[in-house]
Image 1 (cartoon, rainbow, N blue to C red):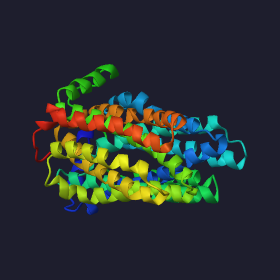
Image 2: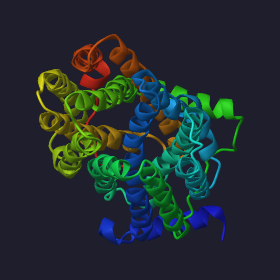
Image 3: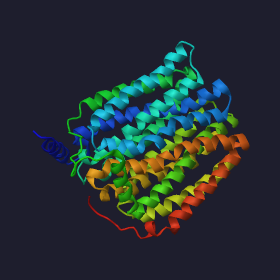
Image 4: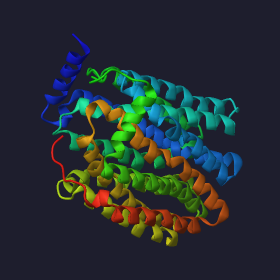
Length: 418
């Protein structure tokens, strides 16, 4: 059987189930990533707590966040071009295997009393690099695993996965960190082992059936960039996501410091961050209903103004837990955006360019995240946590103005089908 025939078989297998929950390969990928994402969220809340405990420096906590997300800026472009040539399941498997080693090194170093700030930076950078390649692969294989009718529910379930992990991961990570500094990182390493197992049982051929021979990487990347520049709605919304991601990344560290200043324990701090997951999970469940009723342009403009309206009151909250409802409301909007706006991307991006274009989208949107960590550290050193929250309202307002004023968003076509 040739590769094209094998991929066709994979698509037929994905097309056969009427319900997404009977789609074996999607469930295997989704289940493994539920646990893997949960582990990542547990360790992500533990890293700044550990750095603050080791160094007492908010700036160094910001540097640790910057280094772990720096691969978003460095590797998304080559990742997309490479993944349009490779077996994406095999790439995902190796990414998880390397992350087991990287995250597993932290509890080992803690046990041996050899943990250093430098080792945390190396482990974060390696883990972030693996995340880049895995995320491009995961997003580009989705149309190969589900039918066009299953795409919106699949996107919603992907959001539910991330938001449920965001709900459970931070408080669980904070609790485990309170028991032992090593436990969140050990749990994260175990989650990647489970993901390795589920990936091994996926049957579908996840390689790309190309319509033209592979060209040099820089030409492949250039083709993706040119395609994206001709799509104004995607182009402008990606810029909006980039600026919003800077805000949310900065807000996460600021909330940790703000909660600590308000007297929160590590467990309560994790619970405050868990409201991101609570609101996001609700948004993921509501997103398919909203997608059927609101156009991408309405969501893109409305979401940005909601973020502005919800961010400023955070600075006035008197106790750690009163931060939660506002955090949850901000997080509710995110999965609605991702299902509706990202769903638009899947409808218009050609299959044989999906990894390349998605890698550019991720480069811009996720590549901005490292600067959020640096911004948070700088703001916290320059002013109070409450002042830092107010300072973030500036870029958030800028996003709302860009979305509202952009013809590319206001004139976006309403699409149906894939």
